[in-house]
Length: 123
Image (cartoon, rainbow, N blue to C red):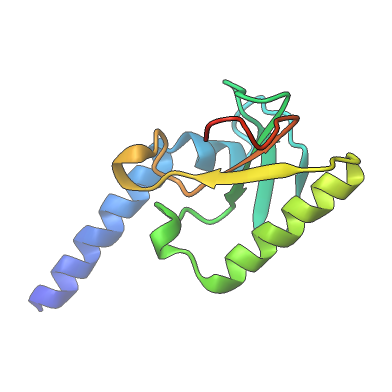
């Protein structure tokens, strides 16, 4: 019985976090966000504080708190989508970066897609 109550508490906490998550609101179409592209599992939109000439966020549509909880297949889809976006934009290079735990401003897994930068630029 205690396990069932603990499980319910965890589910309630996750639902509450998702209701307040700005990225979940973007996925649901509750914000005025310019969607760059999307797949069944991912959505891409511009970063509101760009730090490169091309700076998009790639996020899973499902609320995943951070990359430590992502399955390998999701990483493969992110790589494929990033490569596709680079080809479509004739980019000769790009960088993918992610923040986890206390380093992440938004507690919904996201990968920064940065282009128009060179290899000498600090991360």
